[in-house]
Image (cartoon, rainbow, N blue to C red; front, side, top):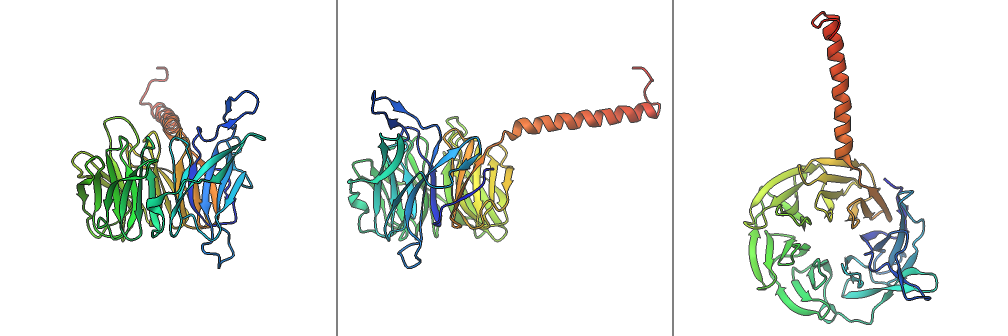
Length: 374
């Protein structure tokens, strides 16, 4: 795991910049060049200004060789007294949407042709339905980037056509507040969890409720994510909190019934995500720990204790599922490389088996159970 970098502002959002956005246009021949180092987008700040901590959008470069982020942001855009609390990156690389206390704003990637670096700029595009609103607590695009879902602190949930911002679904009473949203890989369904009541499944085409996902034994739902693999073993994951700690519940996306519930952490889960290849889950806790879990058997594969000194606010897998960026209220961000535990695990068991077999043979020969020559 790479060393964490401090960026001077409490961080609330983190994601990888799409490779299509990170293409810098060359002056000479109008070709595109992908930067050698992947870029990470970070968002955070101190709020309305009374704390003296600025609010900003940051770009940091990730160095695969050292497994660490750049000491300083490669680009920074201040947002005045407005805190960027939630973010949603467009999968096609068009830009990124940020939720501020009273509105949402669209930002575009700015390719600087002079030094071929990527930056950010505020867009002239005004998101009319998300102007003069309460705080949006969840923002997400579907995989094709043609739909945008937003949910706010008063429980209002909406789905818009992108980029036209034409309303497809508007529901004001689904939850007391919306905590998290996620589209199914095919974009047909939207999952939502909130401050009270059951989880909900929405049929995007018919703009109606498809299913209700009930809680059990005093559970509190936290985050929801569909599996990202394209095979037939699709599932919906929902993180839960009970007295004993955090768990992950799996749901069948056809019958919308529970498949299983797996206890994963004694501490509440404060961040959650699923790898693009669907093989891994990642959770962050309020104690700053990061756990990587195999989706095949729901066993914890890697634990990074105190990866951050504060609550983990965001997790995002790289497009190739081989790295995980995390952010925290302690102003730090870091990248955890994903190790091939399966291969290493098999090798370890083979070595252990050979050692045990050698010991057994030696004992058997020493006791005369085997002839001196086999």
